[in-house]
Amino acid sequence: MRALESLRALAPAEGTLCRVLADGAPVWAVLEEDRLRALDGKSLGALSGARLLPPVSPGKIVGLGYNYKDLMTSEGQEEPLLFLKSPNALALDGADIRIASADRVWIEVELGLVIGEGGRDIPVREAARHILGHVVANDVTAADALGRDHHLAFSKSRDGFCPVSRFMRRGLDASDLAVSSRINGRTAQSSRTSDRFLDDAQVVNFVSRRMTLAVGDLILTGTPRGAQQAVVRPGDEAVVEVGGAGTVTSRFVEERR
Image (cartoon, rainbow, N blue to C red; front, side):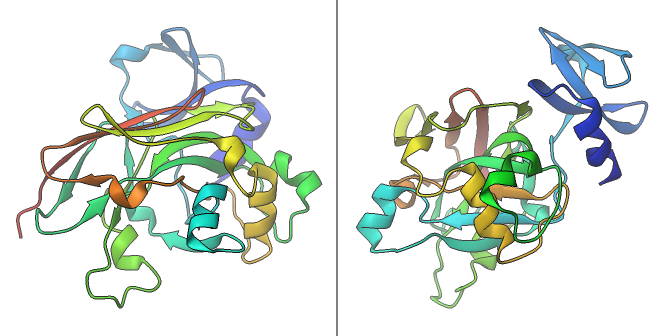
């Protein structure tokens, strides 16, 4: 967490950041064209030769359900719902995700907020300074086959069920970005962040009124309609994308039990 706190002071207010493994330790770097530079100015070489790590290491992953207006209307919801994903669900863009062919699993494109300053009851007008940057995430979800997983722990917290983009975007205007998901090249979801019920600042306020946010926490700001029809099976490739923020590509492989 201390590394993230120093990152707020050292990183450029706008730009593309990533975490790389350098000399056996994670290091934050700025992407400059196709090369990486550590925050202390040291060159880390070409991006193509770097071993990338997820650009976030959250203590908790908080998700919003029903935060897109079309989904709220169709489901009769009055405000978003909150759920938690275990940090062990975190994975990096490009990682394989293991699922059983008997399970019903779908993908959900999400714009993620990385918290750079913690707090409780954060006012909307102050929320922007608590956001370190944005990532793209795929909120992979398994159907609640038994009808008992009301807190979604079984459904959303399996290992690898939260792959994120390789880069964090700083200073991104996320008010009206294209949001989409594709399975084997076929569009499954398509919307814009302007269709969210709560925008970034309102999301931070909404979550922090219900739980204390800590440095490094990841908030998934919701997915548009079509997720439960975006079903994947072993052998499928899924791509989730938020324009200007990045993409996440995942290949689903058979889990042997």
